[in-house]
Image (tube, rainbow, N blue to C red; front, side):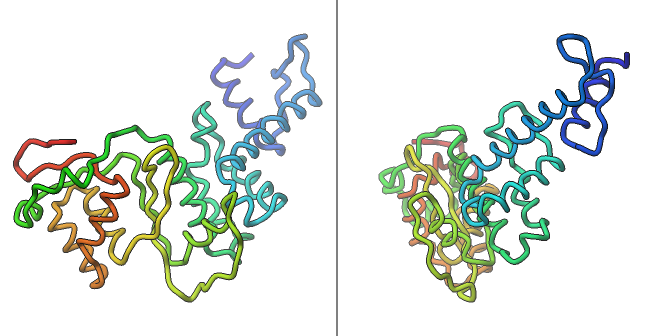
Amino acid sequence: MPPWPELQRAFAAALLNPAVEPSREFVGPDREASERRFAVYRNNVVVGLIDAIGDNFPVTRRIVGEDFFRAMARAYVTAEPPRSPVLLDYGETFPDFVAAFEPADPLPYLADVARIERAWTEAYHAADAQPLTAEAFAPLTPCDAVGLRLLVHPSLRVVRSRLPAVTVWRMNVADGVPKSVDFEAGGEDGLVLPPEADVEVRVCAPGGAEFVDALAARLTLAEAAEAALRADDRFDLSANLVALIAMGAFVGAEEVNRKATSN
């Protein structure tokens, strides 16, 4: 019999690839090999993984329909088996797979919708943190604020899209109502954050995605505002800050060269 690790690798390879014939070393409780028993087990594993992808990407599944989604998910399961026993985490690379999945080419927004769903899952299960309230910023003068470095909530995610992916996502959630979408209207960058128990998805204001990305990269407020203005001259610092603070996007603040503080 081959060494145990080698046998495990061979078992895993045969499990997700029907073209691989199972080894005679794969035996059941009776110590006998059985291709039929292995085929049943293989099918149960693949179906379980397809179901897990469907549970993690319900909006994507709703958009394309059950049959198309299961065929796409089957191809993904074969190409990208899970690396963790926690199936809640499965599908991290699924949006990129969707983007490269040729049969989905007629739906160019689909991969970005899947990215929103993945960001939603990550945000929901991210570490909890107490957000700063508007009162925490009240004592700051404009001079104080420009050198401030804001610490973003660990669950905050930004999803960039050249298409109105947030609109498509929103009208295909459980209580959404499908309607016509103007795909010539331009892209939508989404902010994903759980303010309390649920996860909220908002469309970023002009320059907002670049602003949040810059803050997440630990640039100061002034530097982040400059980055946002370079990306879009319509960027409004005050409006973006008010919206982000109300959303609970910040968990701490520090003045450059000073010790960090939090609420």
